[in-house]
Image (cartoon, rainbow, N blue to C red; front, side, top):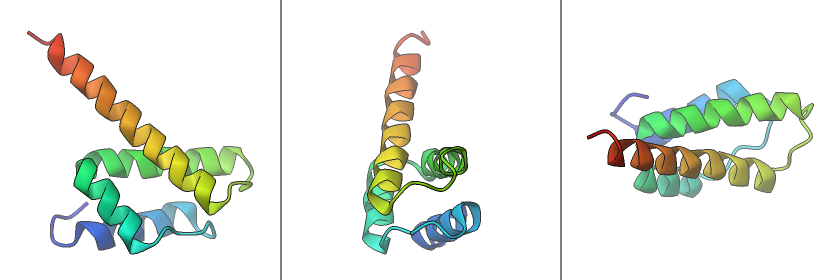
Length: 87
């Protein structure tokens, strides 16, 4: 994602990868980006798109947001664990 407008870039990525899936409000992207780096959110959106297709597009907006958040949070925990044992 470009650093110029990370919220707009994240929304654009969501719409391009998830197509006809409902898109969260801009505020949700701001919350995500206040907690997670843009690269982690990019990964989370891509994983959400994969899950959406695997579920044959049977995910509502709440499910999509919760899944994307869970992926981002699990990646954060993974990176914290990796950093702790890197020394």
